Structures are given as structure tokens and as C-alpha cells.
Length: 474
Image 1: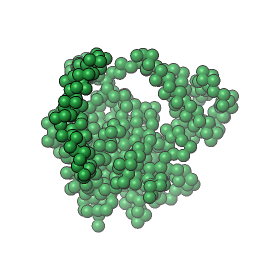
Image 2: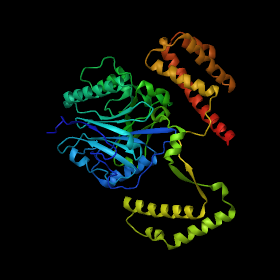
Image 3: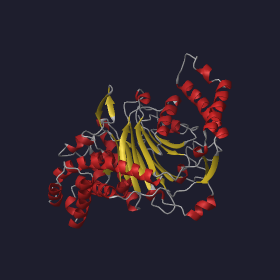
Image 4: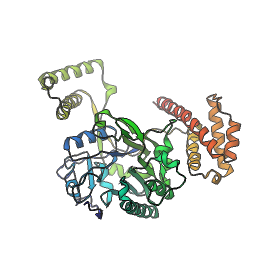
């Protein structure tokens, strides 16, 4: 029998954490790049995480997708095994919870990029199926990230409802403190099937979606989807079936949302029938900004390569230097090995990477620059950008059936931006008078259909404008 009463709240001292510190033996300090404009979250049902080679392959995938915070579900790790999981992974720090006894289900984990993990101040774990972390940044609101794996077995209705009560409590606590909130994981309830339900029973598996909506959280995959049919996250025999893996956010994060989308990698798809779901948001409101004076005092620097100073003669020397390294390396011999498994792949890649780095460091001029949170890129503030920003606000109101709560002045402002956009690009497939009439009279369903089509065109044009804007600045 699995114990489901395990519950824990841990306050983290980042000078020396008492929890599963995966960097305990790692003496080298790893800095997080706070100058990045975006923060990437991911959720992934891994269907077991006991094998070290599987752990390494999956985290290589998360790192490749530049994921800053990843939530893993259905790890099938016990509390005891979780303490020793990923202890040698230097680029992420992780925390795990699960049942106290051996199990064929349950278990969740959360991993945070090295450097960013220093801002984790609290870890909450509940019932072997929920783990949450709080991150704090000076001069900004705190953020609570919750990763949950909802019971799918209908024989576990009572356990499922107890888990939802725990979830509700930590969300309400975070809202009371004005946290940013992210809830992600395997909900075991399809978002689209939920929309067809007219009555949700008290112990229904769809209670999780109903609860998140009641707490005024938004389904980011649904919100940013631009396709006619939203991508599924779970497959049966390789065929996409349902969208049970989801990422939800609080209202104070919606304006920072960029996109939520699936990442389906064939290399890891043989290990799980769930695809990786990632969400990208702007991070300025989460991180805040350090003062320039503080940046100068901290004096954190990074090395950049001055490629613009490379001449044809320099590149010739670069090739010659690399060829000499390759001639003395053992890389070529690796390809005669018959058993090319994942260990072989990682070993060969490490050797190739070493050759590239050594060649670059010895042949390309470099300079050190101070790391800064302040982007030097001017912001694009075109009418297209403003139209897109207002469209997201109207879309959010429509999804909550609160279009009537937006006053006439704001609606007119949105419609004016849309009209300018249509005229600018000579888009004739939309009738602005019809759009005005639909929005003004709060005809929600018609508005959703039109705005979905508009959003696709707006996004494409906005990307084009941003690219041209960058080229103009250069």
C-alpha cells in the first residue's frame, strides 16, 4: 500500500541547502544569464525516471530547448530514491517527492537552471504528487511554480480530491501574497473534452480544470494556440489522443505570455508517450532589474568572440589549427566502434566540442564585457505591436465571457489599432465595420472566430516588422 500522507515544506538556505543539492560536489560557480529576455518553463510526463541514462538524455533535451524550470511527472521515484537523483547534473538543481514505498505510479520533480536556483527560497511537497517552489528576486514579486500529477485511477477519487484541496490552499496562499503563479503538470483531464461538459460531478477527473478556472488561472496552451485544432500531448501507439499535460498561469502573468507549444523529439518519444510542453514568457516583471551601479559593483563578466575582426587569413589559420587538433585526436577512431549507444554519442560530442572550443580560444580575438540585465536593443512599438497587445486583452476577456466588462473607450481603442493594421497591409478579407459591430455588441462566439484568424496574421506581420526593425538598428 502506498503512503499518500507525505507532506513537507522546506525553507531553502541557498548558502548550503539541506535538500537534494545536485551541485554539492561542484565547486565551480555557474552564473545564470539574467540578460535573457525570456523565461522558459516545461512540463513532461517521463513515465519512470529510475535509469540514469534516461535521465541524462531527457535533461540534454531540456537543456537543448533552453528550459529554465522543468516539472517532471510520473517519475515513479520514492522519497528515498529522489534524494540521489541527478546529483551530478551540474547545469540543473532539482527537488523530488514521491510515495514512501515502492510504487508503479506517482512521483514528481522540479529542476531549475544552475544560477537561477539561488533564488529558490521554499519547496513545498504534498502527497507524493505535488511539488512547488517559490523564487524571490529583489525589487520584484515572488513567483510560485507548482508541478502536479493528478490521479487518473477512478478508484483513487478520494486521494484525488485531497490533492486538489492541497493545490487550492497553496494557490490561494500565493494569490493572497500577490505572487506570480504557474501551475503545470499532467492533469489527466483533457481541456477540449472539458469544454463539452455541461455538468461537472464533485469527484470528476475534470474537477482540476474547473478548480483552476475558479481560481482565475488561464490555460496558456489554449490561449496561444493558432491552429484550427490544438496539439495533443499524450499519444496511444504513436497516435495523438488527448491534451492532458497543461500549463496554467495567474492573471498577473498573462501580459508577459509569449507562447505555449509542444516539442516532440523522436529520440525521447520511445521512452514516454507524452510530448514535452513548454511555455515562454517575458521575464522583466519576474526578475525585476538590478541598478546599473550594482551591475558595475558585481562586475560579472563574460567573454565574447570578435568575429568581425576575422580576416580571410585568420580563418585560414583557424582551419589549419583545427585540422592539427583533429589529426592528433581520437575522434576518427570512435566511428569504427560498432556499439554506438548514448554513452558513445555523449563521449564523441564532448571530444568534438573540446576541439571547437580550443580552436576558437586560440585563433579568434576575444574581449570581456560586463553582464547586464538591460537590453541594448530598442523596443518595437508599432501600431501592429499595439494591435496585437490589445487583441490578447480582448481574447482573454472573451475566454472568460467578460467582454461586456470592457468599457467602450477601450474597445474603440482596440478597434482603431486593428483598422490601422488592416489598412497598412491592405488586408481586405476582414470587414472592419463588421468587427466593430460584433465587438461593440459583445457577440462572444463570433468575436472568437474572427480574432483567432486575425491573431495568425498579426503574429506573422509582427515577426516581420521585428526582423526589419532589428536590421534597421544594425
